[in-house]
Structure formats: C-alpha cells, structure tokens
Image (tube, rainbow, N blue to C red; front, side, top):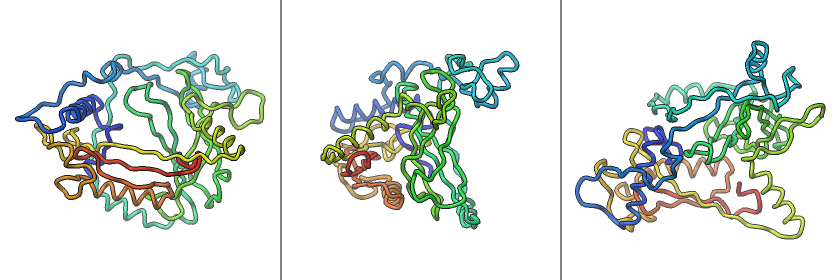
Length: 326
C-alpha cells in the first residue's frame, strides 16, 4: 500500500528526476557501482523539469459569473449571461512556485471495503476519465483526471451516457471543457454494475447552436486517430496495433525505485529481465493486481513481464484493431 506509485506521477516531482537519471546511469553502466552512491542530479532532463512551473487557475461558470458582476474576469460563454470566450482572461497563477504533490498517507482500507458492500439502491456509479493536458504543459505528467456521476440504470452503450463538462482551459484560456463518452469499462475498484467511462474532450458549443460541443481540444489526439481508423476500415483495411508501456514502481518513502538499495544501485541489469522471485522481481503482487483488474475491466491487455532493473515492469495492450487499442 505504501509504494503504489508510478514514475510518471510521483509525490515529489523534483525527486523523480534523480530517479530517472539514476536509472539511465544504470543502463549505461550495465551494472552496479562500488560503494555508497548518492542519486545523481537530473542534468539529463529537459530544462522545463527543473524550472519553477506556472499553471493558470481555472474557474467554474458559477464563480466566473459572480466575478463578472464585481469587475473581475469573465467566464467562458455568453449562453450563461457572460461575455464571449474572447473576453476570457487567465486567472492569477502562483508564479515561481514549484509544483508539489500531496504526501502519500496510509489509511485503513478495511473501512472502505465495509462500505463498498452497502446496497446502491439500483443506482450506478460512473467514473468519467479523461486527459486534461499534454506533457509540455508541466513537464511531469499528462494530468489524468476523473469525476463521478450517479446513473439511474446501467447504460448499454457509451451513446446512452450523458455528455458532461468540467471547468478547464484550452490554449491558456479558462473555458468549459465538454466530455463525450467513448467507451465503457467495468469498474474493478467499485465492482458490481459500476463503470469506468473513457471520454474525449471538446470545446464548448458555439453560440446560438443546438450542438453539444465544438471541435476537439488541442490535446484530444484520439479524435483524429478514430477518424483515420474509420477511413481505413471503410477502405477495406484492417490496421492492427499493439501498445507497450514500461514503468517503474517507486517507494513512496524514499522516492527511489522499488527494490533498489537506498545508498546505491542494484546488480547488473541482465539479472532482472523476465525474472522471478522477491529478490529479482519486487512488486509482483501489485503488477498481478493490475493485470487482473485490466482483464476484469475489459482492457485488451496482452501480457506483462519484469524489465531490466528491479522495480521496472512492462505491460502490453493488443493486438487490437484500430482505435480499440486506445
């Protein structure tokens, strides 16, 4: 429970750079170093990863309306009695402040399990999942986001789900972002009839139209991929794709890869690839849990294996036809 932490979303981003540099150093050296070694400075990372980050704060339509009456900045659209999108202004940001994630806190999970057994009175919990930005925004992650919606019945297809919104930003402008459901997965966390909903993000609809949304946000690359795959299928092609994701598990207390010595490096990398046993494949219980959760959810996961360093693992999705891999 204390090390469920991936390299691309760690409690303290500044420490993650040291881990990356250490991993690269291990790959280049091909093995262990002698004596205690401190994590190297992240000199091989992009400049963005070491500079103070600046992110604008977005506002909800409700708070934006109040601000408009008091001389503040305006919200995203005139359909709510506000000025047009061109009048939107950036909310103040904390310039020069380094991003800090919350400190992982151990909690008694038996309490959650007790309440998850309560009856839901026929209701369904739908967790909408979306990507809010791309890597170049903060240099650390892709901002995977989610929020929950209560449904009266189990939807048969993604088209049966309501289109939803959240207060976000596009090209630095505060705006309402529209979430369009695209795929339904069984929820391996809440279980029962509850679901995970993969959504795509779109800009709000233009004024004086009956449309649900405008074009895709600039980080919604799935939309263009889907259109291309449909054209290929219509032309009689059957494009196959397989995805591979390598990752490191980090110890939440040390921010060091799981199974690595706290004052140095592990042994030669050839000892860990597709290895077995606690001394060569630390974290397997977590990896197996992820594997089973993907199968339960309906993800087309193809397999898993340990990689060339302790705490490094890999999973594959596919082969799948067209957009089904994503």
